[in-house]
Image (cartoon, rainbow, N blue to C red):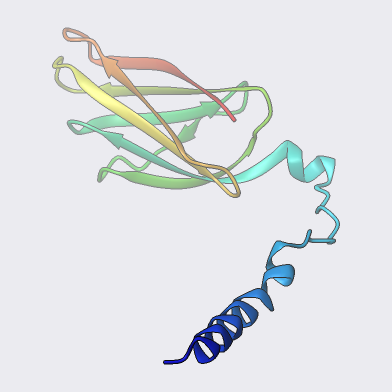
Length: 138
């Protein structure tokens, strides 16, 4: 191939790659989406509660809200909540098992628009009850 043909093929390749380059590298002029204070205060959250053994009763409470019963017929139990995602969030879980063996409870929260977080607490051996506070921050 002649030097002239090689130069023209190289030039054609540079032009084909260079045409979309300004469009790909320019700044996006769209305005940022503003979130209303009410929307930022509370988010829809999918919660998953996994536990070992078969508890007779499990209850969940956010802050000073009322206790919510959790279906203990199978693990994991899944439910949905509206939670504030600003600052420290404390979720209390209490449960009762028939046996006194150590058991674990894992709470996973998956809020819309945020990454999921998990925490695990253990019921002590010799006790039939668990009362733990799970702390999350985003």
